[in-house]
Length: 591
Image (cartoon, rainbow, N blue to C red; front, side, top):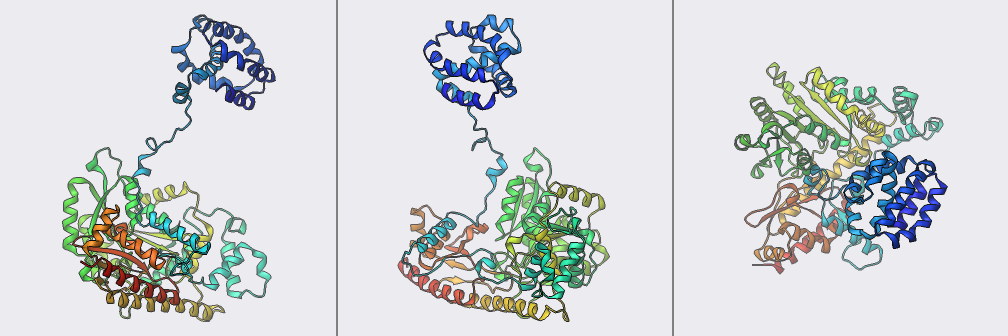
């Protein structure tokens, strides 16, 4: 301990004499710490210390150690005769006494302030079921392949909503504008189309310092918010204004804002905010609500009706929750994740009426609105349906969320998103703006990509033909793979899958043999996770188990999520491997 203290003093004190004296005293203290000699040494040390040290850090450390030292000291005279200097000197002596009191030193000077037991309980409550040990195993298999391991596949496909990570190409116009923003000198490069140059200049002209490296206003770049408001107006046939738009770092930050503003400060369990969330549903909602210690009101989607919302079920679960919380909001994910449903106009109307009747804020997660795969199926935004319902609902409170991560752009990593506030007072909007101002502003690149998605090239623009072709190629491929996924999954033994109408996922139900369930239990795994683990080892695809979306299974029925994002050739090959694996699995565990 003394030796470590020498190094500490060498760093924290400017007194050469003190460092040398401490070094000479190391061996002495290890022999003479019997108390008498130590007290006498401390008395002489007081006067020396007051002259030879200029170390503020040392004096502060001594001050902190006084209370600890007092019960153990024997140098009562020193305590009575000196004030601050004696405390400092004795703290130095104390540090050497601890050389023979190792365990006591650990308890007093232990610098591990944050431990598993002392960290914020909110962090311990958070769970995110989409990621787990199977994800880690996926990366291990990737490394095994890189080292030349022989496997029945050449790469691992992790079934997250990560379009470009799955091979989806970026939209050229979007990347050209970003390049021009990041390197304005490219304005003179003839390889860039003029409409991309004009778009980049328009954005830079609206920014402080004319650079994307500067902060923006809290709500975001003004011209970008105007573009988003125009997009919403054209989509819904009802006006939107830029002042109601708040640009965020992806959909996740918008989600955090939505859930954060409905919380209630209460020390009573029954006083917590209650938020209705779908099951199955995006697990990030559950994670954030756990962080806030909110009460989760799970409402099951109707699998037999293409995962629609059933009003009787909503009313039942809400009434059951009232004794436990103060219901504040309902989360609607449309198109659905992980279920791939697209709600009808009438179903959205029913939800608006339900929220109005029960005095709930409606959170509309509409990130997948561009991903519609079935002819005759149409996305209806909550904002459009609400405005169509007339003046009776003019004070209805709605928060709509959109992101640049999905759709035809798939720009997950650029972190672009926005929320639109509808029906909120100026006072509430000011509070939200103040809350967001604590993080200055969202990423400027994310803001720009969100604006470009909402205001792409138009007919007649130089870049329109190329943009239109790239967009349609992506969406047509999604449509083809959604149909293929539905057909193949429903052809497999014991598997049933609703039509993938929207978003980028299929969520099949699988009836597992009892022997497979029993073996899963012996390995300490949920049955759906057991199946997905076996599939990963045989097919190279990490399918997300259904319990990650709160679908824990019953009556031998379990679920898993597949994404339709891999390129068509990889997608077809993946399903061939899955069919082979599944048949072998069902045969192996046949009852």
